[in-house]
Image (cartoon, rainbow, N blue to C red):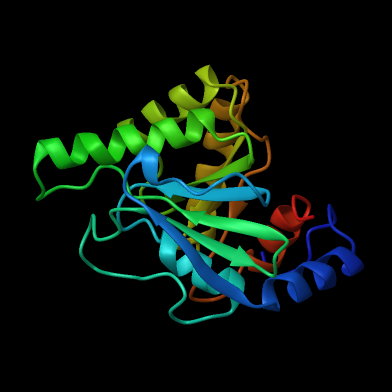
Length: 214
């Protein structure tokens, strides 16, 4: 995982590193669809279950320790958080789904806002669907993929915490996920395994996302 993916040239890897080293600033927070910012820069979003490591991944991609808030408390991020990356790309940290210990009404509001954004945002070019490599996809992840497929919304599976399982277990998970994704029309075929702790896969994911920047 630490070697450059042959899909990307050394120049692409370096250009992506430079892009993600640019100033990345908080731009907007939205708790409802009415609060979403105006359309502008191309956007890439990060979705997944609570505590899957979305904020840690955003921090690792941008080389910052506290750009996106991290927490051991599931459901802490309750808004769609927009970050401006060098005025070339917008990163969107989405509320974790599958959270607990909040009212059902609030969960429904977050869920409605999240999926309304995913279905109707024309500036959204890719959703990175994060899945914990230690556990694999859960039912709620499959439900999210069903919705993305129905909406014809391009999404890519990003495995997080890839330093935790044994290499053989990680390879088995990637193989089984690849077979399942082959049947899903909106899924990107490439699965990326990443670790915010070790840095594995971060350079390649930067290069993947840099292709959407203006």
